[in-house]
Image (cartoon, rainbow, N blue to C red; front, top):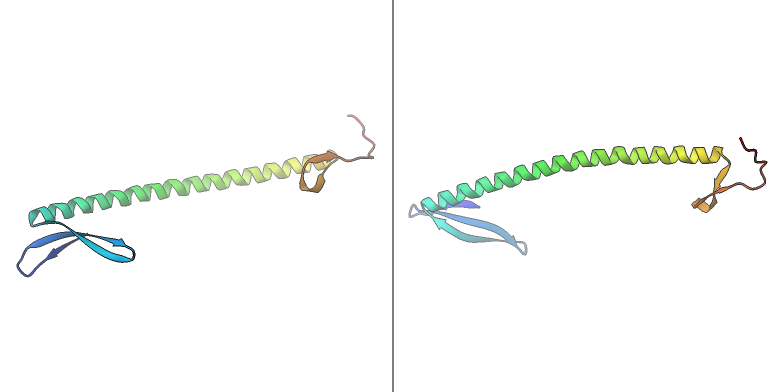
Length: 108
């Protein structure tokens, strides 16, 4: 998006976009309308950038909370494993927990 001036002294506003790796310019307006269009496009770009910055901050906060939750889940899993091992259970082929056979079970 750019204002361009020609030798005749007129100002033109073009929008630039990439299509297939090539830059394609599209004529939008000339004169005072070009200046207005340029200002509007600049405000829209600033709003988009502000929205993106807000989204990045929200995503970073979400990632931090997710990391804390993953840590809590991992610690809880380790505590459950330790409790089951202490109670005489074993893990069969990294699957379900089973009570060990052949132990003298005493009820508390």
